[in-house]
Image (cartoon, rainbow over all chains, first blue to last red; front, top):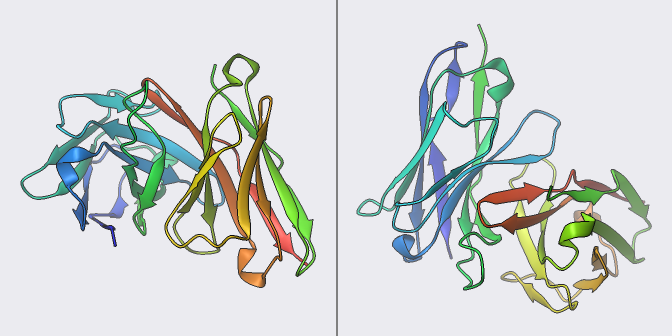
Length: 124
Length: 111
């Protein structure tokens, strides 16, 4: 079964940086777009960023544009999220999610697998 | 603007059925959506994709008790023979060329 394992979360001060990783297994990683989704304490899901299978195209929510950078290393089956200029409101559980890859009119589709999530806390 | 609207809460009795609704913004009423379940203290789990014609594609090992349907801008998730483990938050998701969107989620209580 598809596995997505996040790492790199923790406590960071406002204005600081953190890099999250998501290691994938049991599917052909390079064939699928991947996303990061976050969930603030007691709140709903918020999409953060996505990247195409080859890594050449990236997408960002307005709330993180210019501060976060998504990337992937297909030789290592690993997805990354570099988070800079962190704010208190970035505190959340961060999930990586696999795109279904179903061929359609848009490059992004729905998520068919999720990681277990990891907590990022931005606080002084 | 692409928006999904869900009722914040729903409840139904053990063994009964419940129908959750996700409404697309009017300009996007032909879009497909996906349903995800999030049990307490767990990560989300994909349930199914629901197309505008009501057809749906379920995820791995999703019980037959879960089904999807559609009417106009509304996409539905019906859960029959409710069990205690169905008590969870349910989110709908849709997508466009460069964006993913989630509804606010519905908290389902099994009485």
